Length: 565
Image (cartoon, rainbow, N blue to C red; front, side, top):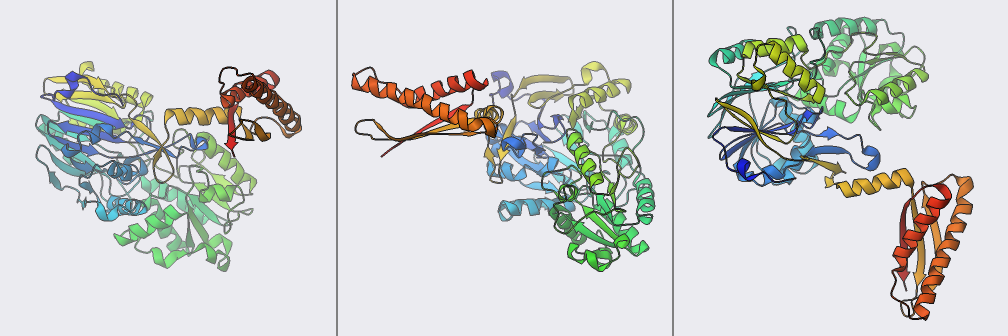
């Protein structure tokens, strides 16, 4: 991470806004709000990686900026419990940021489970807030406001700062009939607008959709019709965090005399957490285990399954590939995709749906029936939010770059002057005051690639080496040397991985061995005649790369290994 310029390091009279993630991408949401000696961090999420074939599991924000100012971080505010908003909290704590965490009840339950996986739950100060509660800090005062989303207990934040009110919507939608929880508190947003709002930062994900969001009541009706008509087993693929959808299905099952089984660790965990705080009240009357499926007629079974995004190894992916030990599809079974493909997952989801059809099931997905309601506000709802709040300045957040552009255009349509609307990307540092709205600096590449549960960084150099090995293969040359006279007493042996087909491999390896033998012979002759010192390993590496390039048109990664006796 590059350091800030001298100008930006001198703390401004205005408020400093710094997105460390979530702008220009879907995921890794993390926003720094700073005034002189105090920092609030809004959300701390991760981004699931599309480089998993190179060992990169996910991407998290680079916390260097916060580490350099860790004593100034006074609070971590979480808007809701999705992974792209809380998933990087364990890594934040490991980075030495030990500020108190504030969140709603269900978000707190989910975070506790996550922290326990990293043995961090007992060392973390976590405070649960109620909607409407005011959290007081030295420089800031934060009011939590209920919003609708695809997870229960989602909140927006009204942040009073020394220079004016800042509103962070979090992820939201406007639903007049949510299945669980309260309606979005539009009256509170209107009152905030009447009082005066300096800056609005608003969710941009669904700005390209021009119709209002589908209500959960309509989703309920459509799911009910499909499940009631099922001749075989019904699998409902959904996000494990969508407790309202779980509640809908369980309510239907109870009325229809059906049973519900949960498939996937996340599904089981979140159902348990939801029950602990009072959701899913009738769950025990309909729940069965996957082991009990054979005890009931097939048409009386509903399975709630994870894997709607075709994640590798997920429950639904294993069903689609015929690899699930307890779930097998038959003709007459239905799979209802009660979810929307996250941008970037479309191809893998499409492949999985094709595999489900091949297993004999009838698959119903978004293009066919309205059986999923997005948790993000569409363009008319986003416009309504801007018009209610009437901010002086506007920053679109949470979206790919095109979403931010469209949302900024919407703000202009609502009457904001162009100089009062700003499109940011991760790392931009903005100073905000009543008289000023200016980008004052930039931090480059505020992200870290993560490998494994221990959170090991994957550097650019390591990733480049993995790419090269994946694209061009790897060659190992192994031999044993007498350290006294530098002679080779065993080998060389040559092994290749990911280089050529089996019918070429034998010939190629034998020719490569002969090539290495020649390099060794030249090296030993040079020693015998007292020639200048040479690096045998480096010579072998260079010559083998040249040999393979001449013969197969590739320059693989070559690793010569010389073992001294």
